[in-house]
Image (cartoon, rainbow, N blue to C red; front, side, top):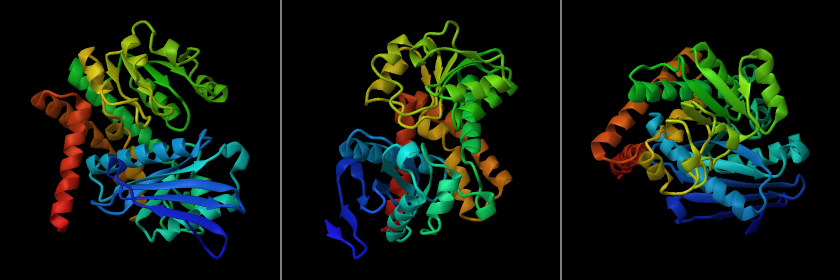
Length: 362
């Protein structure tokens, strides 16, 4: 551990855990900032991934989440066709209590110290306005407001991409790329989920929702009184006639308790790291549940913020996000030909792209 002249503690180390290239532990005593920045891979280019602000119980839990999320970003960016590797940052603490301008500026200085190896953006607990603040100390910041040259809310295209993945799932399973007449359960109707509900209703689906935040549910039902509400995720996954389950909150939504209780034939949602542990993807396949890999279908947001780095054009970014439909179908086809679950097929395709990039760089 070294102490910089401004009193900031900055711990750098390399790790072999999960193949990560670099992990940074950040602490700023003056602002109370404690954060973790994890770079999984830069084989395809600078690592790109959001900043999560969450009240982790321990630092070890924060590090584990950053490592998992960074790895997911490598795979997500690879399958989205982006020239970026994967990274992720987490800030430890309740954003409603400790988030301040000074803390975000301190965080920006840490990101800037990596010299462009990591490009940050929004994630759970951080917003466009926060990225505008971070960008005052770090030019490697995206997901900013249009007033500051950015693309604005990346959840718009995240939801659009999930909807494209859902259309591909419907095409693969039921023969038509539409959710019309299907019942879709959305767990989490926050930044991304409420946009997804709009797409589903426009497509003619029946929608059931739940969220731990009552205000998020009220926002949806005020606009769409036809949407049904259930108490919690446990009730949602057991809804009679549920065709699609869309986890759109935090990770680990698919575990040893959830999978046996699922009534849906498709799982396709916006949450990162939905599989609680290795083997869940096989459990889903064994039960005849079609799983659209999360990091494939939720790539619309990273496509949007990556486009911002080149001078944002919404039509161009939306057109690229539309390709999530084709990518999802390709993964289902690869899964069938290889005799593996879709999650394994997606990993293989992403790993091959990263391996090819490393070989070309030698």
